[in-house]
Length: 275
Image (cartoon, rainbow, N blue to C red; front, side):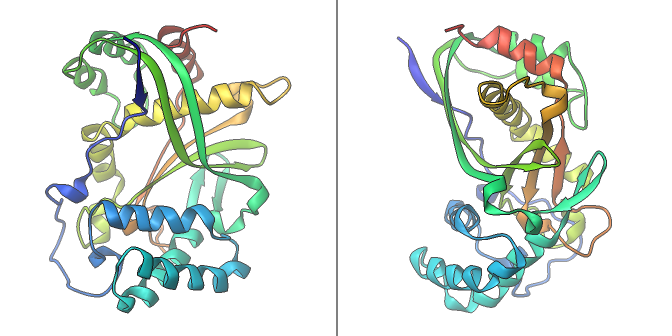
């Protein structure tokens, strides 16, 4: 029988081993904030509702105080969390034609927790391996199709459903953001691009964001006259919050990809049931 399938809730490194880079320094910063699902929900909850612009700082401070209590964290973390939020929002996000910051976003230019739900045809590991194998691209995808072929799950048919943490528009293009609170180590080097590529591969986040991209592609196609993927779809950011540094030059904690249109179209034609 058909079943509802969540859009991949991969394992989290918060609940497994850490990747260490350099000596551990027990300081009160975001790298030492408690780990686990509760921490992830805490940051997701704040980032879903607060104003990202500089003038929203008082609102963010009040939200941090409230949510620390709601989630059962010690009030000693208040200053650290507030500073971490400012750091996250002020970090430059690399774009094809420059960069931007989340602190530049007005509320009307973002959608938090965008829901999607659509019927999927029979899925097998070999089918997914074949689709991705025909479209190798980007950091971390060279061997990803082989990993998909080794997955163990029964043929699946039903509905694919889930939520995208954030969708925002910048210069007429739409971008996906997924917040990650994985603890990879205390040093910023633990969140460098090559480390993140490995995590994206091992945790199946690559498959996850291609499904998110398909969901946003369908969403935009139903709402924008003369929609075109190449013109309107900007790409995907996976933001590892513990590693982001607003004063860094090499974008630590930030993973970006823009799946090619051909891959998204093949996913659409292969796994979706036409309605």
